[in-house]
Length: 272
Image (cartoon, rainbow, N blue to C red):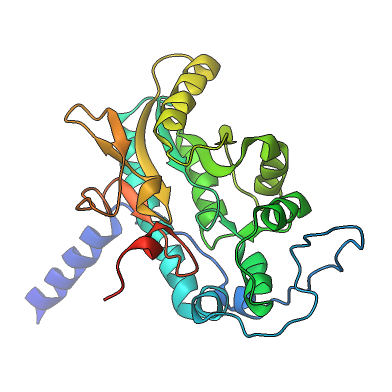
């Protein structure tokens, strides 16, 4: 009996001196699931309002799942939790302001599902002007876990770059929306008509080098489509954007994928 007590005491002592596990990302999924989002009335002068004036259909199942399932919310928080664990490892091997985490915007850090729901319920195809009106409305909210993750990366000494396919002439709206949603970023850029992000990823690194000095290196990417990820060469340099024909190497280690059943380049894949 005495030996058992001694062993138990030693075990307790050993546990007491173990380093505490780093806190994970917390997020109130039930608050998200019970939120009420009511679109403001459309501008009477707007020919292509993003709001659905006369609903004649239900939201698509993918939109419904994205907006209204506990599964989506927990998957998103889990993806950001895994990315944060990787970021903590990066912080140990890179100097402050010398490692870059690059994220897509839409459906990666910004939730635009209200816009998609409105298009679904009007049975409308995507329309670029309606999308631009939505961006200008500044109503996108944070994707679960995104705000806490970007804030944590900043505190760890990493740089955050947002590279989006939103139109570059709407960058001021995008930056305002990111700030409103609690997303930290050191750099943001939209697109000037080219969806491939390779040149903009490299441009982001150049801009951050000018802003912070040294030679900041891209070490992590997060997105909701594989085209949000680069294919790297053996030295870790960016070669090109990933496509549906790639194996997806790196996803789950330095590339972190958010679920998006509403839209994506996967829609062009053959249906089987």
